[in-house]
Length: 241
Image (cartoon, rainbow, N blue to C red; front, side):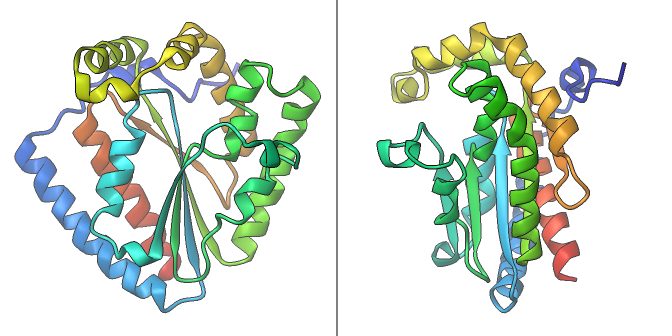
């Protein structure tokens, strides 16, 4: 049996950093990413960042810290929710095509086309035939993007079930964060094992040479944000070198 890619040992390791170190590292990556953006602007490349992970894993916070120093005219962030009636009438990949960035631009997907093999699989919104054939469809889709000049970065931010519960309770206790928690989040939590199993299969079938997955332990938010920024910077810098 192959080693699980989502390791509880990795998630539970102490990845805490001091506030001083966090702010220093964040400023460093902000400057580096801004310089890279100027280089990207003059190229015939684009950047597509896919961010997946459990509810309350810190996806939105990590995305915000990476994109906040960049020229907003060249950046788009999409929070993907359930498809509209029009989108539902098409192939599931259809609604992502018009969100893809032109040359010189960057788009971030807070959840993505991987919903077909994650939540749609677990909640039975997609039939077994549909989600099983989606792995190859997604690999072909991503190959098309990369062949067209896109730099594709796929990140999965993972927290423990205990940490998720702590964050859920904190959101419920703070009035300004009530909008971050709803019954759907609790429903997903009740199927924690099924969601993890779906993610493991997804990693095995869609972590390719041109578009590998990076799994970031995210129990410690500051550490996770720095690792996310580092992943984005290192990948784009290598591709634009």
